[in-house]
Length: 559
Ligand code: C2E
Ligand code: MG
Ligand code: MG
Image (cartoon, rainbow, N blue to C red; front, side):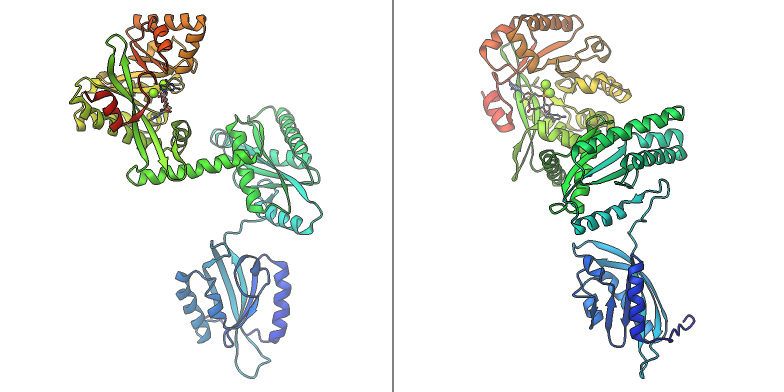
């Protein structure tokens, strides 16, 4: 037991008054716990966050049990028993409470035992404070600006005061802050943050600026409108530019901004926070060094994409249920018969039905889920192909590969291992890449191409004609097949220039040993016209749409 705390100069009523005074001077919650009467008094503000019936109650242990995280209850009970039995006269515990929203909040609870000198009987009273450990500090050390917590307090105060009905929040982020820190060191990073803070304060005038976590800032414009907020952003940018010039361009950085207009009566802080995070991320997505004004429809689309991502992840973790590989026939016009198929991924869920790859492939790529899904696709497609090869030994399968699979995983080892394990003839397998990925090709692309080439696996450049269509770099890639995109092909049907251009591309490809596939032929007319350009393969709705394995077999391989 520590030294006895016999602060018994005043009575309980006085303690209550003192407690109330302290409650006004701190963010922590002051409390008084009479262990003998099982009576509890705590600062009124606690009721905003935690679901207690009121701030003064009896049956304290029973009532508190409702907000204390169950697993932490035994530890707390033990500590209080020590106090009550006189073995301890101090309380100092960190444990968990659960707030009104069900969120766990770590708290630090400290108190000392006081003897009430005004009572005849001995009473053990614990007086102290409860502080939320997660609470961030109110001001930022580097910039001197208020921190996010203060912004929350100010927002709620403004909302409560009702002086202003609307406002705008301008959320600013440094575009390449990580790079600044890595390249020039943390000191320069701090100087950059300080410079931005100073510029924001100057431009902001009466409006309050806040420094958030990382490299982000907020200007809260009470009563402002979107136009003014964008003007403020441009003014801040100009001032930063001026300062950088004055300092002799020691570093380079740009800032982006998300702008969110709101009305106090309809918006709560969490919502505003989420919308501003989204708005800033859109500004960065749109190329950085720009501002983006929040649009509800964009946000809803983003929320939908997050929901789809959750469904995709769930499917990946549940045996790929919901994914299906479809097959579209590829024909040889010379032979007038099917030579193989392209494997095309589909995803269905109860909520969204069958989604187009145009919707879910980018989500798979952004989340990295394309890596396991892509592997599942090539293994499923190869297995299916081997089955069909029993009927048609040279049946070929084209499989799409995403640039993310190539750059962020060892896809080539996975492919080669699967080919070995399944025992498929590698020369009947072809991987398709899109031009956008290939144009910026690096070591991993080169290694992939080399290994596939060495092992007789074929390679196609997909969607040729949608990107830069540089013929020069084709030489470096050693691609076996060029697939001309439907957009390009349909232009050739309509105008002579594109018709001649495609004729030239086919000749050029043939002259360097490449084959050409025309994608997206839908009608007989298109087929007749384009056949004259001598493609090696045709793929399009005219010969067949992508369908599941069973239907493909029925339509194209059965008899
Ligand atoms: P892609 O690889 O260029 O595939 C050809 C797309 O053109 C397919 O769209 C196909 O249905 C469509 N198409 C074929 N013939 C015609 C036609 O005559 N008319 C029209 N209007 N369209 C035709 P789909 O299946 O919607 O796939 C879209 C894209 O999604 C694919 O383009 C590919 O880039 C991507 N994708 C599909 N499956 C996978 C996959 O397993 N992995 C990866 N990384 N991407 C995939
Ligand atoms: Mg393709
Ligand atoms: Mg294509």
